[in-house]
Length: 337
Ligand SMILES: Nc1ncnc2c1ncn2[C@@H]1O[C@H](COP(=O)(O)OP(=O)(O)O)[C@@H](O)[C@H]1O
Ligand SMILES: [Mg+2]
Image (tube, rainbow, N blue to C red; front, side, top):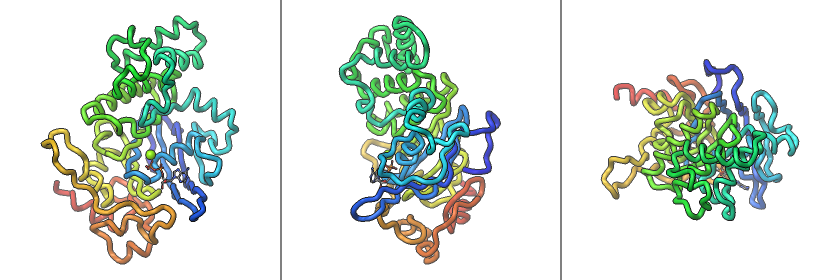
């Protein structure tokens, strides 16, 4: 995602370059992330998409300083120009406490089951602002209202198990923005939810981003979920960037066959119930021993012998950047559509 500057700010909120993450295991190194880069600017929504195991979560965990100590990390991660990889544990804690917030797939992993949601949100408010407990509580009610929880004045005293999955995820988002973060990272925030609730939670995230003016990085395996709100897209496959570019371009004319495959497997709200999606044939490779050349080649309808020999570099194709030897062919296929 190089060469694109936003009109809003010169320095990205977060800038990742040449990120490599490996996990040593008894069977060898798991090469989870291989030379990935992206930027996200103030007020911008970046979607990181790809199938399970493509390195999406590991890339953002690296940015938060949340990888296990065994992880081997190289490259650079800059938060507003400051090197995250060189930060002390204390600085990282402060960064996570006030500047970067995360929303996870399962809100129960982040919500305290024995504490009312309002009290948890109020705690977040008080970390950031010097206010008394009553003000913090009314701020919690405001936040619950903002994320669309009905009767927030009563719900503020509910425990997580008293809320539905969708309502819990809303509460989690309220908690994530309580300290007015600069950057909100949502890792598959809707994966555990029904399709109709998914769309609502995405709208809530967008509202939360607007209310805080933060940047939003949203991770998904389903490009359809983020279509309405993403400004930029990074498609990952087997730990690498497959394609990156502005969302409109990626959706209209993908320049990587993997992106085209992902777009073809988007579940549609208007499809009759029980309609089979068109999945991409095959499965992603093992990250212990990724195939030589393009990791997608074994599943790719456009693959030629070159693809299994030479790793394609990320390069400009159309309005995007793609790591595909046949990216032009893919890009031109959709020209008249
Ligand atoms: N702590 C770990 N130890 C070993 N391998 C890991 C660890 N965390 C993640 N991985 C591996 O790294 C790869 C990328 O994982 P991840 O980023 O979680 O994928 P996803 O795109 O689904 O979020 C996967 O092959 C996963 O098994
Ligand atoms: Mg993940």
